[in-house]
Each structure stands twice: as C-alpha cells, then as structure tokens.
Image 1 (cartoon, rainbow, N blue to C red):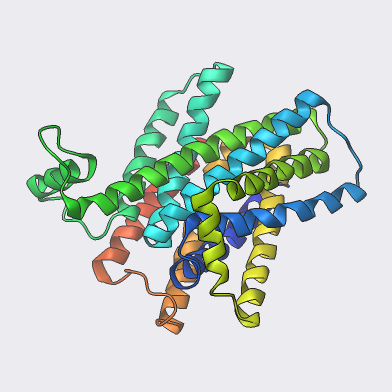
Image 2 (cartoon, helix red, strand yellow):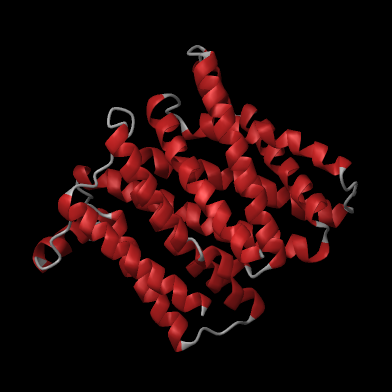
Length: 321
C-alpha cells in the first residue's frame, strides 16, 4: 500500500514543482518570501488533531519542532535552486542525491553497510543526474568537459569565472537541499516509529510554523516579505497559489504516510517515477503554453535527459530490488 501512496504523491509533486517554478519565475522572485507563504499554512494542520488528539512529551515535542524547522530551512534552499534553473534540471539533482544521503545517514547512525550492487547504483544515479541536470553536453570532448568542470567547481589556482558562478550556486543549493531533505526524512521516520502518525505529523508542522515566526524577526527577510505585499496578488493569482498549496499539502501528507509505513530510503529511491511524470508534464505544458512555461527540451537536450532518466530509474530500481 505504501508503494502506491508514495508513487501517487510523486505524481502530484511533479505538477506542484512546475507550478512552483512558474510562481517563482513570474510572481514571487524571492525563495525566502515563497517559503514564508508556504510555511504559514502549516498552522492549519493543527485541526487534524480533532481526528486523533495527542499531546507529545517535552523530548518528543523538541524532536517534532526540530523536524518542522529543518523542513522550512530545506524549502528555502530548494526554492533557491528551483528559481535558478529549470524544474527538469533541479528536481533530478535533488532526487538523485537524497537517497544517497539517506543511505549515508543510515550507515553512520544505524551501522548499515552498502553492498556492491548498492554502490554501483549510486554511480549510475550520479551519472543519470548529471545528464538530466546539464544542458546538451558533448562528452566526447574531454578537454572541454574538464574545463567546464574546473570552471563550475572552482580552480585551485585562481578565482571562479563569472559565467560559471550561477551553475555553481545552483549545484550548491541543490546539494544542500538534498542533504537537508535526507536529514528531515530520517528524523520524521524516527518520529513515526514512536509517535502516532497524525500527532507526529501535526506537531512537526508546528515546527515549520515556528520557523515562519523566526523569519519575521530577521530584518532583511521581513523587508522582503513586506515588499512583496506591495505587489499584492490578484484574486486569480491567489486562487492559483492556494490550489497549488492544497495539492502540495495532500502530496506531503501522502508521502509522510508512506514513510510511516515503509522504508524511508526505498521511498526516496522511488523518486525516479517523479522524473518521468515531470518530463511528461513539461512536454505537454511547454507545447500548449509556451509563453507560460518554457524549458530547454529540444533535440539533443531531450535525448540527453531521456538517457539520464533511464540511468536514474535504473539506479533507483537497483536500490529497491
């Protein structure tokens, strides 16, 4: 059952990520502001306690609030990366790295040892993530490829060329968000092992709302939020934002429900299905609404992304089986 729930949540999330990309590009250009508005809605989860009232102890409350706060921080880096590039580049990077980090944390904290098959799957995941996340690359030109690599990750003999800095920021934000996502998923799994699902979910959402309050105490971030209100949303834009947040909340609840029943690492690995949904949705929307959603998916770029999806899906399948 958890398998179907997880795949369904990834399908909904694929659409949510495209909508988030649109809102970050066209409407709200600050990841801090967008994470703030997303986090504000966490307070309404408190009503779920009406179905299953539960009050955590001091230690349980601390862990719950920590998980929720960490999730909000993760969203900030995630939205930064999503704002910087195409959804079809950012989602696969984060999705490929998250299960890898999850395995590493399992090894550190649970003593799990990776087998040869799992290590091989990691290599395949990384290769697939590179193919999906980069524009069309002529890999047979090794000298050019090496030059790009040094430019992106820094030259030990000098500064980083300005034209590579956006890519470096994209990779940095993607890696950080993947790392934090993995930590969050491990913590939330720990919560569900000892707490009821609704109770653990609701009180962890209160941690996200706590993070929203903390944001307001940071002057520069508060100014960004106030500035965004000068360009208030029209009723149409507000309705679209609320609709997306309802779908995102549904997908998030489903994913947490799946995690509470199954393996967090396996569920993270199932994100390969999300890439397929994402590419199909982007192809459809780019063709039908090119003025609203435009992603680089022509010719060789699309062929490269398809190969990347096949590799990532293969790596994820190796982790699952």
